[in-house]
Image (cartoon, rainbow, N blue to C red; front, side, top):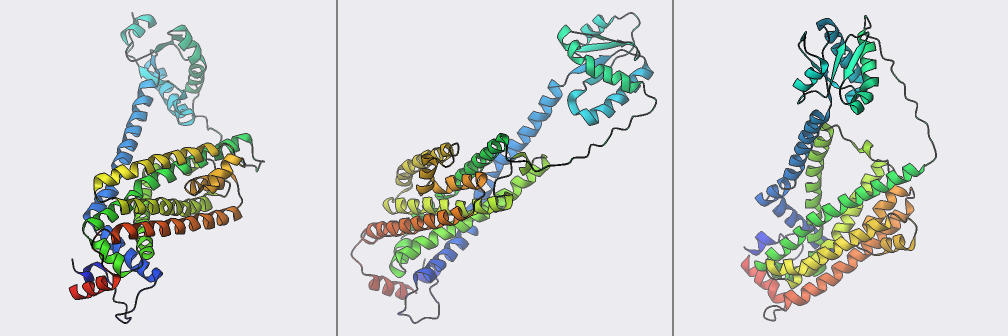
Length: 418
C-alpha cells in the first residue's frame, strides 16, 4: 500500500509543514472510520449481536404463550346448549376485563347417563373441574381446593350469563397525584440505575475491543510505523479512539433501533422502569456521554496494550487481566449504588474507570446536574493522561522495534513512495 492510499496528508500546506495534533487526529479518525464502516466484516459485526436478541425475543414470546396456554385452568361445562352459549358469551365479556382470571371453558356434549364425576374422569387430560346443573343452580364438581377457589369466578360467570343483554362496564378515569418520593420510588430508581450500569458495561466491553484489533492489524502490516513517523503519536492515538467511538455509535444506533422495535412489538416500554431523577431524556443523554468516556478510558488502555503485543495471541493474553479488572470495577460501581453519598460511592466516582458507571447511577437517583459537569471534566482529564502515557509507550515500543530511523527519513521515504 502506497503512502497516499494510507495517509491523505494533502491539505494545501507546504510539503515541509506538519499537521497540528487535532488536524492529524481528524485525518486518522476519518480514515479509520471510513475503512471500518465500509468493510464487509463490520456488517457481520452489526448482525452478530442481533441474533441473540431476536432469538431471545422469539423464545420469550413463544415461552410466554405456551406457559399461558398450559397453565390456564379449564372448566368443563355440562349445561344445556342455550345456557352453554350464554355462559361462553359472558366469559368472553368478562375475560376482556379480567384477562386470565376467568377459566377457559370446555363445552361438553350432553350425556344423559354420565355423572359429573364420570365427565371429569373422561376429560381429566383437558379439564380440571365440571360445571353442571343450571345457571340458576350451578354445581361445581372437582378437587376440593380448586372448586373452592373457583366459586367466586363461576358465580360471576353464571350471574353475567343470566342477564338478557350485556352489562356495560364502567370506564375508570385515572387521576394521578404528585406525591413525595416514597421508599418504593427509591427502590425503583435504584433498579433503573443498575439497569443503566449493566447496559453501559455490556456496550463498553463489546465495542472497546475494536480499537485493539484495528491497532494490531496495522502493526502487522507496518502501516502504523509510517503513521507514527508522519504525525504526532498523540494525534494517532486520539484519531483512532474517536474513529472507533464513532463506529460504536453507529452500532448502538442500529442495535437500539432493532431493540426498540422488538420492545414495542412485544408491548414493552421504558414505563416498566421507574423514571430516573433527572428524567428520561437527560438520563439517556448522560448515558451516551458516559459511554463515550468509559469507551475512551478503556480504549486508551487497550491501545497501550496493543503497543506491547505483536500477535493476536499476545493481545488475548495481555487484554484478559484488563477485562477481569474492568469486571471488578463494574461490580464495585454496582455495589456502591446501594450506598449513595457514602465513602464507597464517592470512591467509585473518583476512580476513573468506575466513574462513568457511578455517575450514571447518580443521574438515576439524584436530580443535581452540576456534579455531572465536574465528573465529565475529571474523566476527560484522565482520558488525556492515558492517551499521553499510551502514546509514549507506543512510541518507545514501535519506533525502536526496527533499525534506528529518524522521522525525517521516514517522511522522505513516504514522499518517495508517492
